[in-house]
Amino acid sequence: MKPLVEIYDTTLRDGSQGEGVNFSVADKLRIAERLDQFGVHYIEGGWPGSNPKDIEFFEQARRRKFKKAKLAAFGSTRRKGVAVEDDEQVRLLLEAETPVVTLYGKTSLLHVKEVLRCMPTENLGMIADTVRYLKDHGRTVIYDAEHCFDGYKLDGEYALATWQTAEKAGADLVVLCDTNGGCLPSEVAEITRMAVGRLNCRVGIHTHDDIGLGVANALASVEAGAVHMQGTVNGYGERTGNCNLITAIPCLQLKMGRRALPVTSLRKLKELSQFVDEIANLRHSPRAPWVGSAAFSHKGGTHVNAVQKLASSYEHIDPALVGNTRNILVSDLSGRSNILLKARDLGFELDESKPEVKEILQRVKELEHVGFEFEAAEASLALLIRGLLEGRPELQFTVEAYHVSMRGAAGTSVCEATVKVRVGDTVHHTVADGDGPVNALDGALRAALVQSFPRLATVRLTDYKVRILDGVAGTAARTRVLITSSDGTREWGTVGVSENIISASLKALEDSMEYALVLGKKFRR
Image (cartoon, rainbow, N blue to C red; front, side, top):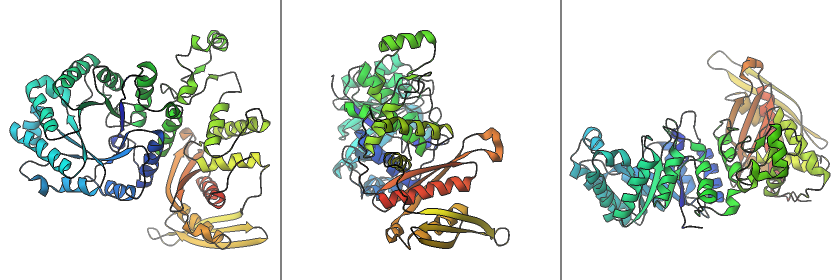
């Protein structure tokens, strides 16, 4: 393996700026924890100077331990005409208390004159002051050179001066940013090579995908000497997106021989990709390179015949290296390894030769066929596997009936939910109000269950997502509900599917409560 290439993930900041992407604070914390487990080197949590959500994220993130990744706060150089110590945005960067601060500054004279509307020398002062101030406060500083390539093509001497200014002020890394995403790999490689030759600090790359070359440009920069790559999971980002780390990482490691992440992390690449898509409430692309369900699928007779004899005849790698599976579309065996891997992650020890494995696989396929999705609903999957392995063990409780209604005048109406829950020989009949039908149902179910299970009082629903699975069916369409719950120390996801959104929500809520009751028990056989 050649020298390490650092992976810097900006899904939570740059990725969240993509159309249709909207993360809650709970979403961001779940994704950050998964990215840390995956092994990326840096996680950019957001811009604490831009919105209250990011400030709250950093407040909560401070109370969590990241084992592998360093958390970064993102911001800009000080404003023109303002001393760095008086700049509110810079103060918030320090108050985020992250070990790393990434700040961007202007490279292009066009932006200096027309956007900042300041003298070129003042822009250099803004860069130097901010980098030095953050370094004096003990931060690792990554300097993102915005519009780097366009700026260099406009005035190479000034562009270089901005990078060298950041380096001399103490920047640990200068990242070359193709902010408009319009450069070609040959241009990126040439300018990266020049920067590596003229700077003494490490050089990184940050690309966008406006002409479909985000990954190609990032790889070209690494070939030219960059040792740090920024991007997002599944390529989320403004306009057409950022460099897709899910595509770039295996290219780095399996095609270019560049060390980036442990081999064990690569095997969870597909799982990470699907997890973040599900949290973002976006449909996972079946044609995604490396990790899509179609990436190693074979349908044509000639292809199927050849692959069964020699896999490499139509597969460029072993799909297991990235957590994917070969899918012979006429076979009923595809997906078995995924179930085994996921089951082990959830705490089950399964023997591939046992008949239960086939039963679990068949049941998962049946449920996925009607709309269930388990990537971000680990708790529902754990309960499903437990039920099949243990001969459908008796549930902790059963919802025997429920009713949801509205009362009050228009504009001031309140939702009311009633549930009848059986726990052994005891029946609880409770009612609760809520802001909406699901909120009321959640309250009634919880009120019933805490009478028999007081520890459920700490469980809270922290997020709720709905996806219509068949839009052409109109109001009769099947609906998938994904909820996230927490007991204050950990979070878990559950899923429900039905033509009735309330029924789908109740299924997800029931799974959430059931999982909370068996949480901590070992699901081992």
